Image (cartoon, rainbow, N blue to C red):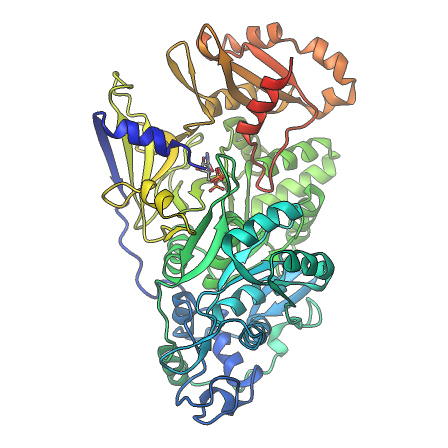
Length: 629
Ligand SMILES: Nc1ncnc2c1ncn2[C@@H]1O[C@H](COP(=O)(O)OP(=O)(O)OP(=O)(O)O)[C@@H](O)[C@H]1O
């Protein structure tokens, strides 16, 4: 990953211009969010999880804690601590929904508490803090569960126990799982029953323990809402504050290791702390107005920051409901949106208000929309239009897709830019102009600068490597001290490895990964993302990936891999190859692209290989194409 480190070091001797941008927004106040449902953590601690004496008595007999006068908490994340200090706002406390079941904050934390007990009692190397409470002292605990209440409870349970969570990818083959587990030296794997047998076997192969995540009980059905829930034991806010103050939090403690996709090298473990997580969720809530009025539809994997932070942790911190659709399906999404907003205008409880996805999800949703009958199209358009917010990111959103989505739903997608190492950094505004083809400006408290290599950019076009400084920056690459040091500038900016520029209004334009999307053709630096966006306007092209292949005359040649539109695909791929020739494509491109940007090689495939986040690994594709005759 970020293979630009080396080239960056070379550049460092060259002359550089720093274009510096800083968000003018004021830092968020400590309590920026409306009172949320998370106060139920306290509710849970005081009545549901354990008998009352277990929490607050001096001489309880809970394992490892009996000597202590005080409370039962080891290190705990600032994130939750802040929540504990807020005032309750009401009793509608559903946190998670999945498969038509609803789970309250209470129920999730009950299970989280049980998980942390299980971890402490598992014989792992626990340590006793100054307050005498046992904690896992940063032991790595992997979590393998589909997006669900159990996943959330498992994650919070690991944090409650003082461990570092390592979310695993459900789609990864055993070899990749073992790489992550061995690299992060996982002590235990937590999973749900459906994955029990394979995960036990994986655990055995890397000398880790295995355990099931304690079940999370749900409220019976959607209609059995929390209004009927008992809430007369809610502790006084004074007690809540005291309780929160007693937590021995150290915000700099590591909380989470997320592995990079490895699209630019071997996956690295990106370590986030309680503090960086806390900072990030507060930034997102402020930037995008998340609130307890929101219900998110989360169809994303949770081992990447998009699904985990944008669509789970930040919403929960804001007191929103997160509804999981564990596996993205165009049918599932359209159906859920249509159910939320019937065309007769009737109001539905639990309607989805926020959706966030990767560009390919929107492409596929549009393709399925095109196949619908007019009545279904009308109800889908009507419903999608009603959402408060629709966002896109993780890879470039091509302009044609953005425009099509706007014409179908009336929503101008909010595109933002992020990376595992700092989660989110740049965003188009919630209010104000969302500029297509850009990722907006720095989020609150984020500083961005562009390292322009003047020597290779004599025209001073302002194109260069994006660097980010933010309270949400990661702490380190797990056990990779050198890689960590190399990835930062002397003044603490993280070097993203992405080539960018700003437009006339200071909105950032991502030109792509320097080592995968930036091609050098006959002395010109070209952005593959820009060419892809133009080619997608061609009526016969559904998806495409542009990449540079070695060329003896020009250094690199522009090659495009095309996936034809569904209609075209209903014919024979061979016929299509004959009809969509390189010549035809070049003739069409002439009106839209400068001559040196026009592809000189064309490959037609039925689909593009994409990872769980819909990303294409161009390094692999290049290798593959070079091997082909
Ligand atoms: N809105 C966006 N437009 C263009 N590119 C984006 C956008 N959002 C994210 N990206 C790309 O995704 C990258 C971050 O993704 P992530 O941290 O998952 O890394 P990766 O490239 O998928 O994997 P690896 O870090 O292993 O190479 C960014 O560096 C950028 O290249």
